Length: 321
Image (cartoon, rainbow, N blue to C red; front, side):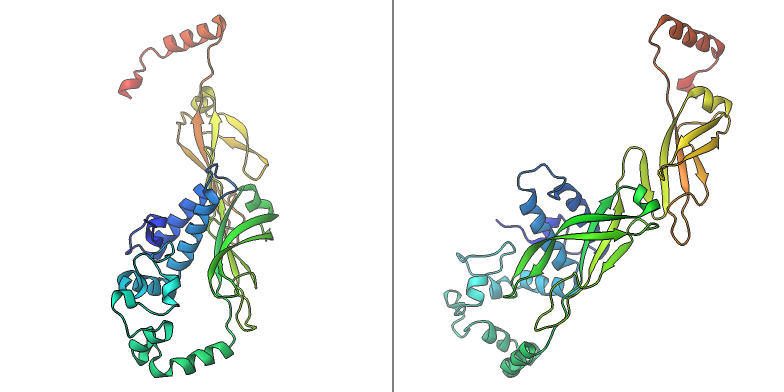
């Protein structure tokens, strides 16, 4: 049985806009054809994009929920339905006679029966008026992941997106679009770039909508970005941590800094470098997260060194610490 848009995103109908966005991001990172190894990744990504385009738009979501709540008005058993159960063939055909709706003759009659609020007797006139008017294309949204170094230096990236849109017949489809995107330095995690006129195409000579690209930075075992702050894990030797030595370390910016470790520093301890995070209007901070690593004893001399270390700290009981 085809999945509806909520099932595609793995959410419930009472999901908040933020939950919808988070679900989309998670699936986009998993099934984007540029990173996914699954054979049907592109097909799944198309369904994910269409689902998000519908559920992230308040008006589209309301219309879609109405369709789900009134399947008898949109669905006919045995018909050629779409992924959400909507009967495209019969909806625009000669009605729902197999279900007993003998008075229906298609799209106009269906909405005419609902009364003047949906057009009623004025439907044909309103339809003609709509056909003569120009409509601006809808704004569209996409997200990309980039290396954190771009936050410090900026970059121009060529990206390929799969964007839900409408074709010349007003039918939904997924468009593959390749763009050159200039990412300025100082972009915070989750901040958007607006590309004017790159959204959905306008109708009847209407202006195109805009495309908003949301920037996300790639997480790794060493780097995590929160807003304008960056958490960067660095390895330190046991004696550096114990003695509080001065060390040199690289930064996500690609530079070197000198850092004084506190004596008896521990794994997980954070050192804040004020204003060394993402260089936006109010610069973020760079947090160095300490990770103490121990060298392997690979020869007799090194084993003796560890033995001497153990004897020097014979009173230390790590399981009791």
